[in-house]
Image 1 (cartoon, rainbow, N blue to C red):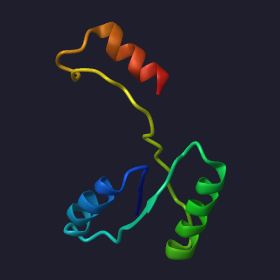
Image 2: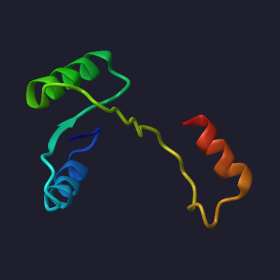
Image 3: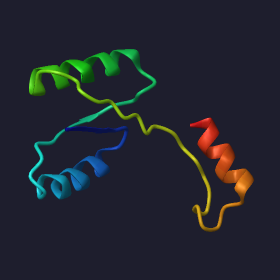
Length: 82
């Protein structure tokens, strides 16, 4: 598994939890808006794991109080935009 983020702090916390479950984890800083960085990340995956099986891109910013407190319009707009 490769975990990327634009910030260093999440990359220091999350992998430990996943590795505790037995997974092999690599991390890297990545701005998904940069074609060069996406290409570098693809190369990292291939070098480390041989093949890219699944890609999940959860990039995006949504400023809201949470699903429980958000109105249906806000939730639908956020899900549609990202």
